[in-house]
Image (cartoon, rainbow, N blue to C red; front, side):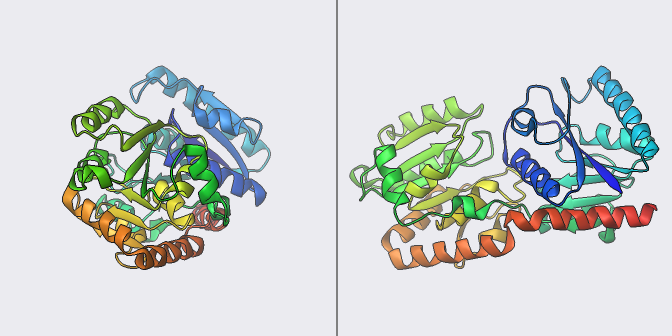
Length: 367
């Protein structure tokens, strides 16, 4: 028998924390014991309350030695309790934030460790002592290989979503547009995510100036972040205040996606592993325009499940939008194929079993 301590230090809700929640719920359905360690007063803590055992800490930052000492003492005590019950314990670190101290403490306590790597960026701490790395894309897996981890310790388990939750019925487009005050004949672009540097929302805004003012698509930009004010200023300076809606964080993003004709996600240098927002858009049957960054080309397959454009090229984004706007047959075909792809490769029902296989492999080598 074994139990897993899942550790996620993110304060805000993101694609990564959403993946953690999906995994925990799936593992619970498989009757796999687990406990979540997370940031005090975080959205993840709030959403997972009463769903599984929870332990929170007030981690101020990576160098908060007091919080790390408390975490170490708690984990040591918890390990002793589990050993007395003949339960083997694993520690699964889910995010970049706090990953190294979490894994180091677990290793010093002689516990098996798993690192979940969700971004296509270099791992900037030693990982030779990690028992396994779960990468969300081939691009993310390559970063673990570059850090010197043997290939047999790396598993690609792709990010997943509840595809049925996003699948629209025949009437939702009309209902969503009515709710959002959109005309039926408007061409609508959806973009969703954290408004932070490198995500390419400035590129998307600049792409819209390539359209005649009288025939410019409507952009629904859902999400929040520290770049929102700058993006609003840019939108106004480009004369797009009537075409762009900054919608803020949406607890339920489905109406935005259901109301749209196309989804655009064109980061310039953000190390995307497998963006949740793209998977959700694909699940609704939207054609996707993505940039050739990180793991995006692994899901937005050019001409098959969407269109790919070079990063930081507003004109190329505009041309891709216009292509889908003018060719409705192509748009619908890409949308159907995108939906079929995400249902086959990224459905959340597959996630817990694949992660369970990693746990089993780690334990088999330890026991």
